[in-house]
Length: 314
Image (cartoon, rainbow, N blue to C red; front, top):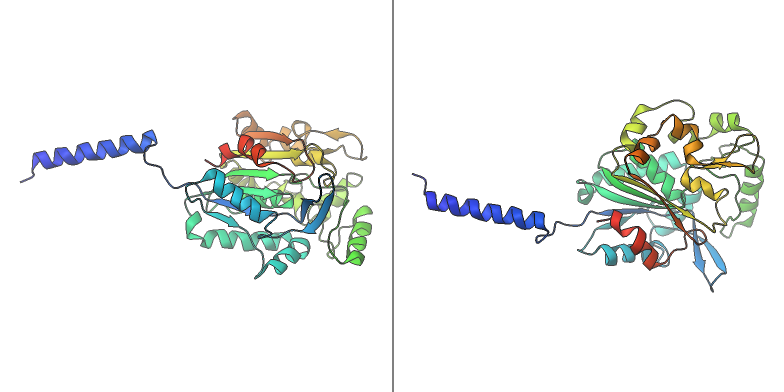
C-alpha cells in the first residue's frame, strides 16, 4: 500500500526543486571554455611599443592571463582548457608555426573527444590563427558540441602579407616572407591561410587548408550543417590591426579578385550570398555578431572583454 501523504510530500519537494532550478536559485555548473592560442603574442612593453613572441597554450602573459580572466569573470569554478599541441610548451610554440594545421585539428578533435569535462558542450575562444582553426573544429568535429565560438582577430579569409615573423631564426623568417610574397604554395610553407588575390585559381588549387573550410573547391554540406549548430558565432576585428593584412579578413572580408587595394565585405562575398557555410543563416537568425576592438592585434582590456564577450560564456 502506497502512503499518499509521503508521495504528496515528494511531489511538493520535486516541484520546489524544479522551481528553484529554473529561477536561478540553484546554479548549474558553468559551461567549460576551450582556448586556442595564435602564432604570435603581442606584449605591450612599454605602451604603444610591441614585443612579438611565439605564443603557446600556457604563456603567463597571454593564454595564462586569458585563462585567469575567464575563470574570474565566468566564475563558478569554470573549467578552462588551453589547447596544447605537443608534450610541452616549446613543442606547442613550434607546432603553431610548423605543423600542418589539418594535423593540428585532428589532434585537437581527439583531445576534445577524450576530455570527460567537455562532453555536454563547451564555448570556444580562438586567438588570431586559433580563431579559424577552432572554426574548422566546429565544422569537422561536432562531438563534443561547440556551443559558442568567439574568434579574436582570426584570419577567416586568409592573409595577403606577413608583416612580422617572430622568433630567433631570422633566416627562416626571411625565407617565409619571400616565398609568401610571391604567392608560393609549397609544402615547406604549407600555406594554411595564405590567400593571393592576384591569383585566385592558384590559391584555390594549392591551399592546404583555408580553401577547404571556406568551401572554395568543393561544397561539403557537413561543414555548413555543423557550423549552423553553433548558438553564436562572434567575430572580433581589431580596428588598428597592424598584423593581419587585410584586417577585414577577421570579418570574412577580403581583397577584390585581381588586385590588392579594393575590399569586399562579408555580405558581398560568394560565401555569404550563396550561403555556402551558413553565415547568411546565422546572421539572419541573429546568431552572427561582429565586434570591433579599437586596438592593435590581440590588444583588449579586461573591461572590454567583460562588456562584449562575457555574455557568450554564460
